[in-house]
Amino acid sequence: MMEVNGYKIEPGAFLSGANLLLANLSSADLRGANLFRAELSGSDLSGAILTAAELSGANLFLANLANANLDGAGLNNANLSSADLRGANLSSAVLRNADLRDAHLDGADLTDSILNNADLRDAHLDGADLTGADLTGATMPDGTTHS
Image 1 (cartoon, rainbow, N blue to C red):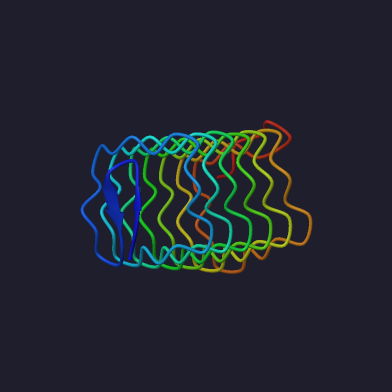
Image 2: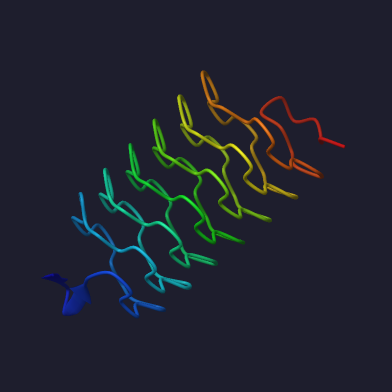
């Protein structure tokens, strides 16, 4: 367990609406944590364990999530624009209506993820695995909408 900005950072933590702007959460264990609408802009979550965490509505603009484990995480309506998600595990993650504009998803695992109506304009997807991903209504990097 660690403490950041007065918040206990631990598995299952209740951090809904928490202000963790620019926080250093590198390698933090937040599996199953509630980070609904948390402010995480510019935070370092590289290598963090966020399996089954609830991050819907969270602001992760410019956050570093490189090599983070977000397997099964809820990221509906999350702002991940310009975030670094290189090598991240987003398998089975739910990213409905997520803002992924200009996000770096190179080498990310998005197998079986749900990206309905997600905005992927200008996203970097080199080497990303989208096997089984649901991209219905998603705006792709080239601006086209996936049917």
